[in-house]
Image (tube, rainbow, N blue to C red; front, side):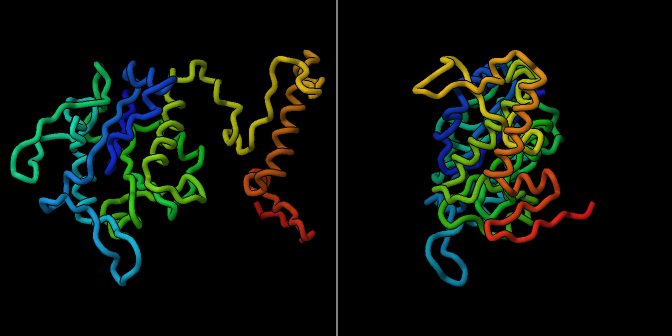
Length: 289
C-alpha cells in the first residue's frame, strides 16, 4: 500500500524539496509513497485569494481564516494523490477543476505521485495534522503510528497561526516539532514526512536498520566511531576494537543510558520512572507503578 501525504500550504513550491532526494526520493520514484501539495489560496472566497484576517480582540499579525482552511481540508480528504487527481503545476489544489478568480477553469496536472501502482482504498482515514508550536511534541512513537497508516494530511501555518475553531471543527491534531518558532509549517512538515518515510517497508533496507537509533527504545543512541583509529590524538575506545561482542553491547548500553541521563533528563525520567536529581540537590522521586 502506498503511503500518501497531502500538504496544505501557501508555498507548494517548497515540496518535495529534500524529500525528492536520497532514500525518500528513491522511495517516491518506486511508488512507496506519494506526495501532493494543495495551495490554500485556491479555496479563498474573494478574487484577491485572501486567506487571513486580523485577530479578534486586536493584536499584531494576521490569522488564517477557518472557513478557508476547512474548505482546503475537506478537499484534501476527498481526493487522494496518486489517483491522477492532485496538485497542479500552478500550485492549485487537487481534484476536480477549480475555477480561477475570473471564473475560468484552471488546468490540473498531477505532480509528485508514483508512476504506477494502486492508491490506497478510498475511505481509509488519514489524520490531519497542523504543524504549530502550540501542539503536542512529536515523538518517535507517534511517527511509527503514522508510518504504519495510510498516510497523512499536513496543514502548514503562516502569520500568527490558525483560527482555533479549525481544530475541533475538522478534527485536526496539533503537533510541534520542538520548542522553537519557524517562519512557517513547511520545514516542520518536511521533517515529519522524512521521519515517517524512512520507516516505510524497504526504504532503509534491512528492517533492523533503525532498531537501535535514538528514541526507538526511549533512550538516546550510543556514540559511533570509524576509521581512522586515531585522529588528532583522539582514539576509538578500546572496547570497540576488542572484538568482544558482549562487552561492546554492554559498553553501548551504558553509554546510551549515561548520555540520556545527562543530556535528556526528561527522556531518562520517562524511561526509568525516576526523577533525575536537580542541580540544587533536590530529592529524587520515584513514580508509583
